Picture (spheres, rainbow, N blue to C red):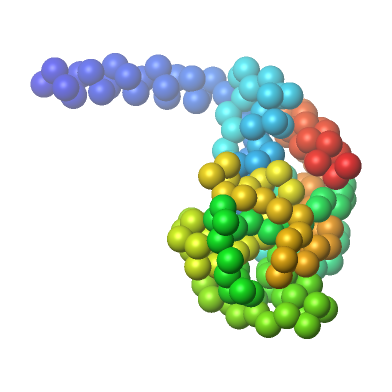
Length: 212
């Protein structure tokens, strides 16, 4: 049928293009959703992607770290409690609160499950001020956390410069004490191919700008 012929005509060039690419041309990159939204466009602006097939995986840092260890990813940006052995660069970036514009939530947090560095930072900052808190919304997904923030029922935290544009990002405010800087690790497999190495260099440049 005509529709089937059209689909085949579209698919053949794509297969030919993929077959022409070698492993050297592929980059398997991982990072949490907020890092991808806030930082990845700036890194891609620095890297020529001609003849490069970029595969991007967005997940929690612990899962991404495990994927690098299994060589399922070439490189990843992660935030963990301790520096991993595979880290080739470490930069500390400011951590900011994120809320709906004008929202007052009185210590109600939206957070990833226990073990998340950002979750611990929020709780520690509130407890240091003697402020009460509760994890009102817990989600393993970026979408779930920011749905709660957009509804005005909770606040969360992000690395500076990575908040969605429709939400308010603040370093501190009444009831929201200043948060610590957090480490961002660039982790890689032992032997990066040239395209992956260029991506690593671009990510380091972007993080250096954000760490100021």
